[in-house]
Image (tube, rainbow, N blue to C red; front, side):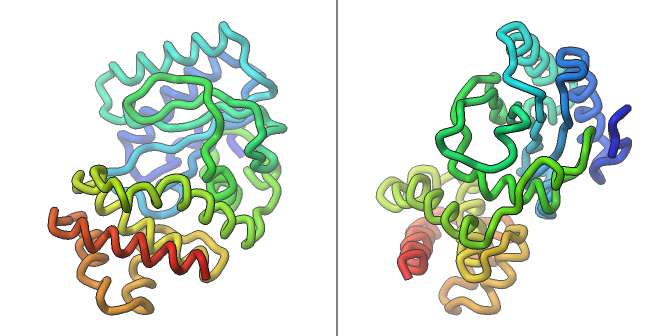
Length: 259
């Protein structure tokens, strides 16, 4: 627990730690005692952070909903960080969630402040991956300040994780089969292939592992047809001619989900 100050070395990356210090100090100056805790989840917590491609996923837990003044001050804080000298200031992606709403994911929960990399802080509904992210935060989250995440989040069952994968797949990945324009971006293309491996792992075991771990599992257990595609995704060396094969991989994942 790090109630009085930032965990001095929350990650293995000193430049990431510097921007996290600035973020936490700024949030504390704005929210004071209404800040319950701040945590890292996503790739930094899950073990697949890559400085070349990853962002910084964080959750700030608040004692209640933010006032208009607090929201405006936090938006200004993120704008200052984005304009600062560190490249990570624009790579922050996270939520400001009231403590009761963090306990368990409910799609009917009220919208909350959210920022995506390169964007401004806005109020919007939580994504359909809320159960997945809560699981990662509860089981692997990195504490910057506040109590352990397990004190704030209920366990997420394997079936809840499988259901979250199904919902996320239907909402986000099925449309890409018919409109694959995003796959022509090499970084997103690799992300798509690795995410299919991760989704297949979760469907099989009801558990979450990092994308590299899931990809290595897929190389050992899946049809050899997919091996060259997965290996290029692991190396972040996708080719434009891989797009049709990736669409086929997404389609095959759809069949696995149906099963």
